[in-house]
Image (cartoon, one colour):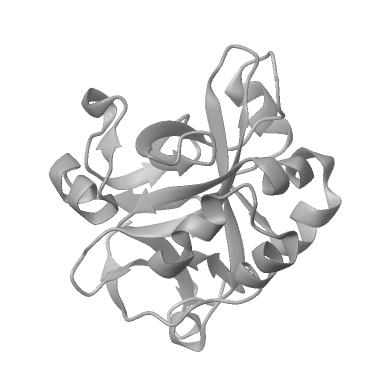
Length: 209
């Protein structure tokens, strides 16, 4: 789950779900597997532009960073973070205050070791509809948006299919969408939003690697 997401939704389905338009509609392509080991873009909504869907590079870089994505990721992998790390790490702290975003996905991956072998699972909504993941972002010196997913403690349901990680990406319910993207939202409310996972009916299916 730390390195792969999924978004099989069409542009039309995402527009219906978000009630927003794409800034760059030609850049969105439905993908079963978004591999974080490579420089990959993902559809996001940012605090800077909460009324449109744009694209972010998955794997946050420092604000105003001047070098390439792979150079930094080889030193520190930043596809995911968590509440504790955000509040302590200079790379993330300002982003939580001023640059929160929502990543639009239809699923994420989980893994389990059984009898010495890795089994892979795709975690999606039962209807395969899009949903939001909590994220933060920075802007590089040349204007590219880079983002990271915020993790939370894994639910019991997911732990039944996962014994390699104790965390899962934090889903943001639609009721919290506006508060998450609003610069006037109190930080105590933001910390509450990211403090625990939210109940959701996921379909977890075993897949080939």
